[in-house]
Length: 421
Image 1 (cartoon, helix red, strand yellow):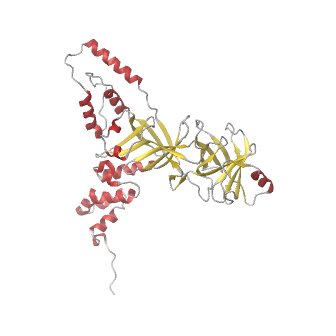
Image 2: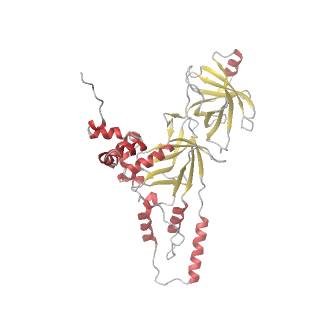
Image 3: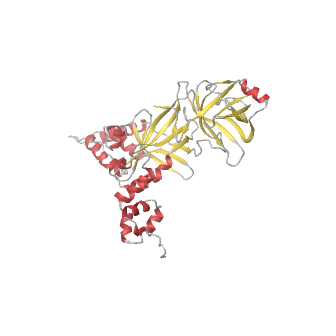
């Protein structure tokens, strides 16, 4: 009996070869392309190989063919999405005063990535508000454009974002932002000063003023738009300006630019563990009605080195947050399995659930953790308890109060629950 020889990749049809090659990493692809001229051409085929690579990686999450107005090369698109997919997920706004919420969610759109503020609603329910403030798109020549709504009042549609020359994208309410992703899961969001100064000067309507204040060109993808704006705004005077008039106009322009409000750079930290696991049942992002009878958003984290559990408020519908808005701390090993003692049962049963849920299973305690309320928190320093329920949710309360805050998951499979526009 003759031995069965293993098949080589050259024995497969070209479509099958492309499918196999599309799963190779960059270094593997470069090595494979050097084996022959045929495979060099195949590995550089944009419409076939690089489209397949994009489709395998992100085809179920976004519309590959519509990025960059449908004109961007798939090789460039793969390079951009490979970098910016790190944004997808939840981030915490890292600043001493973050407004009503420190939570930001980045998610895929049809041909862009959207950054959303996640805010607790004021309807005294579990609804949360998803408020877009950043849109990340690609130009046809392979550059990223990050449109930032400084005042968070605009609502861009797919039609607005599909065309780079859209009227809304030209509006002064939007600014271009630079995104800096560091390796330690940190994100910096900064205003693109270069383009912002250019646009402020153009929209000032300065007649015959020279555009000497623009020292460098904006991104290449915007050159056509800039030329159109210059052509429509720059007029021609019949009578030349005197030196005194020119100095006066330049001084006025400087004053206008100084009056323009600057947008402060923002720093975000990635939340890597936003859902509970069997070994860390309290971990993740939660929402619950607090003692002020308004919805709060909570982040519960487990210490990597120490046997600790840390809970903090990351969203509040009634007051501004500070950097460290702690709620409770506990030890991961300091718990009691059900059934709990009669004394602890009395502690639990005599307290009021601020938002009771119908159903005995929800209130069935499977595990109880001992906790304290950190000093300087709004609870004061107090002993507390964390009650893990049979359905995987939990509640917490303090001996100095007569209530239990019952919380529900904020996310499921990376998507917000009970989200409203």
